[in-house]
Length: 132
Image 1 (cartoon, one colour):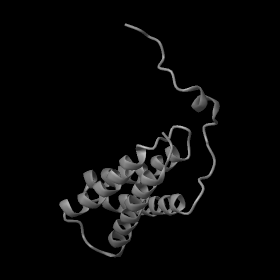
Image 2 (cartoon, helix red, strand yellow):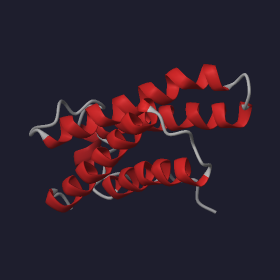
Image 3 (cartoon, one colour):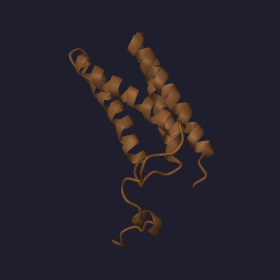
Image 4 (cartoon, helix red, strand yellow):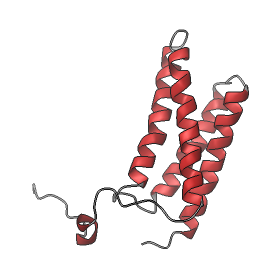
């Protein structure tokens, strides 16, 4: 069994961890939508923990998922295929809301709208990204 570390192409090793700010409007729309959804989930989690601990943990994980996704997007580790993962993550949030029969209020509408915008933006970025 080999203990050799898998190699990464020399170009990605030469790039800094933070690759800079993206160009264009759509990446910022996606980041803003992710921040809106993450903020709502993380803000509601402490309120939910009193009556449903499992759902509160899921809210924290959803919020952290969006924040970690933004961090990876702005790093050298981002790959084109991650756009599809990001879109699927947002769509899973929307589906989960309806599966658990979440209460439809202003924050739910705002969060699910942000996640829809995020999924559309991530799909658009996947289609238009010409990186290998």
